[in-house]
Length: 205
Image (tube, rainbow, N blue to C red; front, side):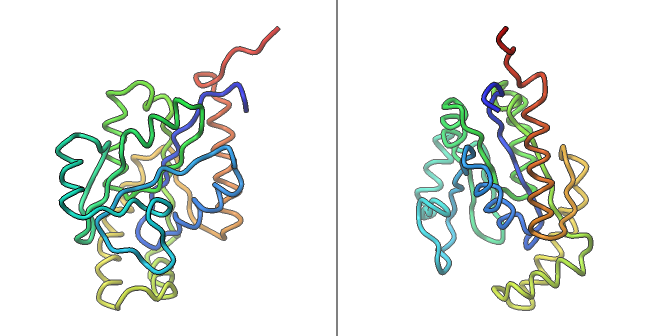
């Protein structure tokens, strides 16, 4: 919709909830949308690239940027630091692009609070919480991923139980089904939000 203001789409989910897959599918379906790249102090995983999947910073560099106030949000998750540069969001929105954020529940809360003080971000922000229909289903997905030890999976499930109860703080709740169905419903959300009168420019007569 060329007459609509750009969106800042925030998707959050418990670990293993499927948000990375949904974000990848959404970006493929919406070439007009760009992904906000998160900064992290954790090590690269197989197949990841610096500046593409994440900005990988050492702890001293991350701390320096925190002290300089460069992050719109930052947090420690499972011992690693994560953050999103404010410039990463603002520059893309100002260029007219929709921006996609893939963040955890803690980061989502910080961004919601920060957006209240910044009108441009508040106007653009749309938050979506994605979750499997049950903890049992989430555990099954984590086991299939085969990237964590059993004790790590149980730790993540404990965190997930605390995160899932935060769903009421989001604009939308998306109960995960299949990859195709999750994408279909996410595209409906995007189109509906871009059609809001508050984000639309007057038609020409």
